[in-house]
Image 1 (cartoon, rainbow, N blue to C red):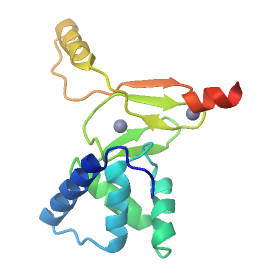
Image 2: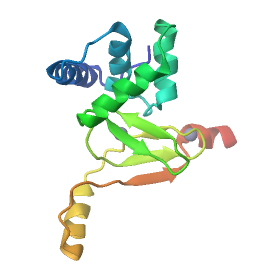
Image 3: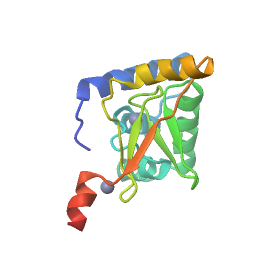
Length: 153
Ligand SMILES: [Zn+2]
Ligand SMILES: [Zn+2]
C-alpha cells in the first residue's frame, strides 16, 4: 500500500463512499472495496488503469469492467471527481470529490492538489465581471514537478 499523507481524511472518505453505495443497494465485494480504498486516498490522482493494476495485485481475477463500473457509479453519486484530458485519459480524485484546482506535471503526469486560498476571490471576480451563476469550475496548472526538474538537472 502507498503511504497515506492524511489517513484520517481517507478513512472518512472511504466510510462516506461506502454508506452512499449501500444507500443505493450496491453490493460491496472485496474487489469493489479495494477500488474504494484506492480512490479514498487518490494519491497522484489515479487513472482507471492505475486503479486496476493496484487492485489486481491483491485480487488477480478482477476485471477492468469492475473498476469502470465502480468508478462510474461513484461519479453518478458525486463521490468522485473526474478529470478529463484532451488525449482521452481520465484521472480520478475520490479524496476531494468536489471541484478544486490541480497542478499537473506534463512529464510524469502526476497530479497534485495545491492548497490555494485565493480561488473564492477569483470566483467572485468572475461572477462580478460576467453575471454568470457559477455551478462548477476547472482550474489546472501545467508544468514540471520537482522530481522531474531534478531528473533533468
Ligand atoms: Zn513530474
Ligand atoms: Zn484533486
